[in-house]
Image (tube, rainbow, N blue to C red; front, side, top):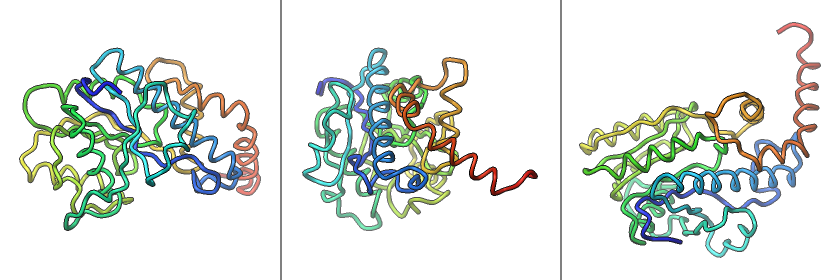
Amino acid sequence: MPHDARCAIAVMAKAPQAGQSKTRLSPPLTPHQAAALSAAFLRDATENIRLAARTASIAGYVAYAPDGATHLFDDHLAAGTGLVLADGTAIDLAGINGLGRSLLHAVTSLLAAGHESVCLLNADSPNLPTRFLIDAAKALAAPGDRVVLGAADDGGYYLIGLKRPHAALFRDIAWSSARVSCQTLQRAEKAGLETVLLPKWFDVDDLASLHRLADSLTDAGDGPYAAPAVRAWLLVNGAALADDSAHRSAESGPFP
């Protein structure tokens, strides 16, 4: 992994495993289908980072947990993707818990590896426009300290970018709530950090958002990343989504 790349972009992820991945999508998906979808998300996210690295000084990573799980990522990542442990065990600060510990662990480790900045990316937006990653890396390359934030439609964020391990951005955050991005911006303002906002995007963590993703991959235009691994998964497993849609329509009757 080229540590001379100015910006490290790491996907926060757990290894795809049946019964442990995309559980909110099972049913209608089987546990194995859900794990395969999770693997497709990882492939597309890391390939998207690799594509962005053609334009900006970026190194791609997966920030993973638990410790000892590196072999479970074999064959699921873009070539050249590094792995960095981010299980939160290296962080013991008051008010920083759960996901916040893992995020700060990843930032600290990647800065220590020699990168000038770090972006942490969720694993649930496989069609994220590549230009968002490029814009984040370029914003962090400019002189001065700042935070880059890509807010998600559900109130969380799909990307956070930093040049320093600002623990305040992860302290006392209501993780998994609709307040995450708002609270993070408040912490940044209180710390006197300049904030660069990326356009909003969406996460895929339930059936409705998976249908939205499938629709976006058929739309014309060059905005979203093409997500070829997800497209391939849909070719094999799309019938499960179609059957579920037909079932829900039949249950709702002829009126909206």
